[in-house]
Image 1 (spheres, one colour):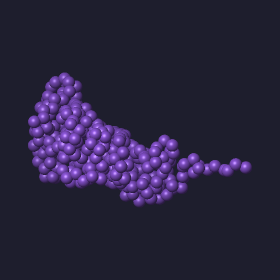
Image 2 (tube, one colour):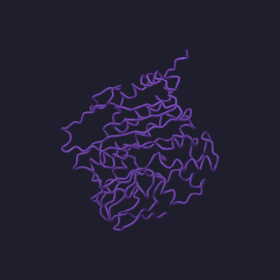
Image 3 (cartoon, helix red, strand yellow):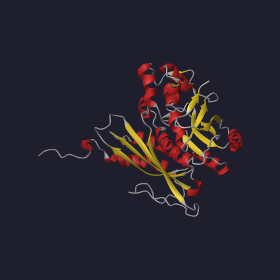
Image 4 (cartoon, helix red, strand yellow):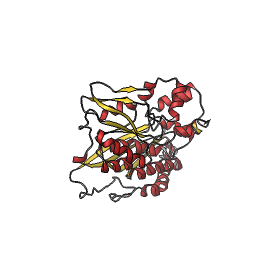
Length: 346
């Protein structure tokens, strides 16, 4: 009689899944807000909206992953911040419409489930949710032997936020002469890592554990700095100032993302002279011999969020941000013109 096969023989260990759930429960519960109705382990995740808080509630959703930054996580064996990146990539999009993040769900896929590594990933997700004010109310961990190489995984996320219909920020009232204010990023965030890897590991043969003086850290540590999470700051600003439009500077850099908030017939002239370009970008540009326009069309260059406000609002907004030690930068102003941004580098 032939040996009996089990699911584990195919490479899927359901007991590793059970162990993962036990390890992540405390992280998940720390994110719960008053709207959470369900607990971890259900087939669906429940969240109650406070209908007394909104006149015409509109749900705003966003989904994303962290791209090939994951390959840096594999090289460095740093896994407790990559989940924070996944949260940031979603909530930073949602906040651009003025929406308060409500809840987040994650999806983690791997070839062989390592409960401790999965726990580290979810710990990062939970930390990101706490920073965003969102509840981690569900997710999925999929073990798929044969699809991923040993030690590799992927993570993606999904966020839902809420905003009153009359308070939606859509850029429709942006006019010529409005001021563009940039808020600093924490680093590369989670975009452009295919070029990052090309420069440092294929072109220049760096080691992730190599200490780089101008970075003040190892290369791997600099590349793994988690994406900054903006909702707490932006929601505060929205409550005090009229913000006409916002752009999360993700893949496509300045050229692709800033125009996404403009109405037809409006574009902008950008001046980069006051931007505090972070050391990691300077190093990468030099080592890769990358054209400056290529840098600004791929990376955030030290500016993670851009807001459009009237000239009358700009001065007070900048003063307020300075009081909060935010170091805002005026990066340009809007203009009536068809076509793409014009960026001046001095």
